[in-house]
Amino acid sequence: VERTVAARVPARRLNVVLVSVESLGAEFLGAYGDRRGLTPNLDALARESLWFANAYATGNRTVRGLEALSLSLPPTPGQSIVRRPNNDVLFSLGSVFEDNGYAALFAYGGYGYFDNMNAFFDANDYRSIDRRNIPSQDVGFENVWGVADEFLFAHVLKEIDHEKAARPERPVFVHVMTTSNHRPYTYPAGRIDIPSGSGREGAVKYTDYAIGRLLEEARTRSWFKDTVFVITADHGAHARGTAQLPVDKYRIPVFVYAPLHVAARRVDRLMSQIDVAPTLLGLLDFSYYTKFLGHDLLHTPPGEDRAFVANYQTLGYLKDNRLLVLQPKRKVEQFRVEGERLLPARSADPALRREGIAFYQVASHVFRNGLYGDEEQIPPEARDASGVQRLAAHAAHSAYRVH
Image 1 (cartoon, one colour):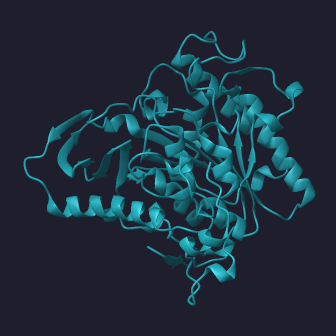
Image 2 (image 1 turned 120 degrees about the horizontal axis):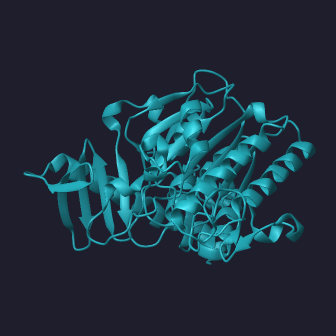
Image 3 (image 1 turned 90 degrees about the vertical axis):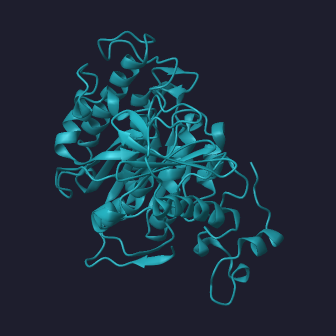
């Protein structure tokens, strides 16, 4: 797993704005065939971006999406790592950017103590921004979850402006987590033609409006031409269930938009949410040491394509239209995926079984045993002779923050 990625050309030190949109399942987008006209801005992005059209979220909760996008790890059974003890000083997308001289930020429109988000990101090389950082006079609308997306985006633009004014040569990476596409589905009046609070369709159309406004405002900044925007989702809207995994509801959009740097095209290869981080770094031509279990989709053979879809203690491994399902007490099932249907496989594939178990078991093993740390953040005395981190030893003489 541990390896060095070596690019053939110098890195492109571009700004990066990664937006994970609350509950934005692919089924809402016209680009995926929906005819309700809810996402005109995202549909335009599909035409103008590097569009990964067959991507799947790892879970059905926000913290699962944040885990996948920041840590590039398959989901482990139970709680997301974002909410677990000893989840600091980890190898993350933020740590890679920070090690390469970036300012790394995490921005959330609500209060980041919810789901332990601020504590997690602050402990892993990001600087957290949440509702407390947004001046009240700059907020035209908010609900129980946080400020409306347009006001969160406006504040993020100001944060980037501030970072660029202070250190113009320093690139910025910011991961933005939205809230508006969530019950009670309320948003400012007069923005779209669906009344606030009337349901999910209005919330989807409003967040699409806000994304369009974000890009429109960003284009007025001098730093826009050297910025990559990644628009995706934390998870789908209807990926619920217990024993069964509704695979089609885990499908999410992934758009990479940078008109001067990334050519627009559609990629239909199977992609996992944990592949977003290494694929992004590959597009930037980064050379870096990595522990990511995700891979760079554009520099990996198609035969290695797979996705992870999980629901608390039910873990799915998707490959070649086959779904392996792992459950407690070592229950293993295999299905054929045909559209929205899961059909029991006529015979199980032992190789698929071993491979799926291996991915999930390794993900659990490296976190539980302190093997997924960011060595550069660990004091030298906490490393062994070869420089490999030993988090257990570090914990013995450092006060770990357990939130």
